[in-house]
Image (cartoon, rainbow, N blue to C red; front, side):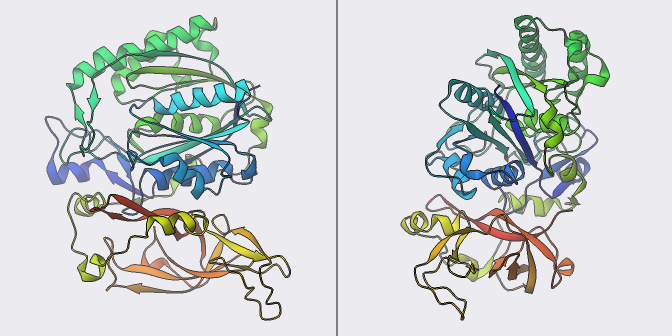
Amino acid sequence: MVGIKSYGAYIPRYRMNHNTIFGAVGFLGTFPTPGEKSVANHDEDTLSMAVAAGIDCIDGLKREEIDGLFLATTSQPYMLRQNSAIVAVSLDLQPNIRTADFIGSTKAGTGAIISACDAVKGGSSSNILVCVSDCRLSKPGGPQEHLYGDGAAAILLGDEEVIATFEGFNSVSYDFPDRWKATGEEFEHAWEDRFIRDEGYAKMIPEAISGLLKKYNLNIKDFAKIAFPGIYAREHAAIIKRLGAEPSQIQDTLLDKVGDTGAVSPLMILVAALEDAKPGDKILVASFGNGSDALFFQVTENIKKVGDRRGVKKHLALKKELASYEKYLAFRNLAPMEIGMRGEIGIRTPMSALFRERKAILSLCGTRCKECGTPQYPPQRVCVNPDCGAVDQMEDYRFSDKKGTVFTYTGDNLAASIDPPSIYGFVDFEGGGRFWFDFTDCDLDSVKVGMPVEMTFRRRYLDEPTGVYGYSWKATPVRT
């Protein structure tokens, strides 16, 4: 039976209270709702968060068995260059897999799930990882600024040892002009909120859910949890009431904790539901965007076997307030920062070199000596072990999923940085290997020699004249 084999999520460390934004610029014609939103760090974007969610999802699983990766987003860095392929390489998946980008709508995530299930059911794939990630840019002071949050979710779909079977779906599609963005534009346009709420949200989600119930001869009270985005809190409650569901069936929308995460929202809520699910539970999840997809899952006994995942709960507990609106603007490059002549020196990796060295740069793969077992990074032909020195006896060795400890570090106030000081140092890996990395998601006074760290995939630069995004791996304190 086709279904979910594993799940994962990623929520950035930084959260910004709605009142912080309101205190800086106010809101267009309204007052802020209570709560906060997640904010991607200056070195995070859609792809880095997709990789983080993917790592959480496939931790402890055999990556070589994954034969497909779908990426769903409305904020892809590249219009011409397959974003899903970058995520696949960064996760060190095999090259003989299918990859695809699902874009252009906030229901792209549920659409990717349906397509992945169809592929597995049809036998063309066995295990497809669906990563959904959004990091949307909104105009300062606009009505979306306090609502849009950043984050990612990942779902692994297959046909063996599933934790929740995919029982069916129902979709409705409309060319509904609620939000749009033309090629080359930086910000979204939005039509009148009342129109979006009354003609779109309040009608299309119930239509998709009611169609699902009729299609599979179900009653709304058959479901243990019902999950769909809560971008309009009052209307969300009204939809639940009209459907005849009980308040206890409703999965928290996370709107006041993370914000509206776009294409990610329904699947992040699904991950939260799976974290507390019991065998036999039926879960209904619906999306909203140019229509709606309603999906129906049933939890199996294998839910008890799910390994440790950070998921939604642990990420919600690990946060730091971003109290500076000005720093938020700098993170988004909406307030360009002076980074000095050092930061203006060309740093872009040539594209040909990036392709040749993709395993080392994007997958963080070094080598391990077949003779003595010594790992090293970057890849080498000669073993560095003075008692070995074997030549051309190396195999690929992935460091991205290895924990490490800080060997030495420094804080540099002269290095170019949007969020100074730059922190970097040497990391010793479990099992062997040492290399220097930039540190992120930490403060200088919190870094200590011997501190446990893990690797995180981050955006290193945007070379605006050429439109090239550079990515690499950084060290971050283990989030516990």
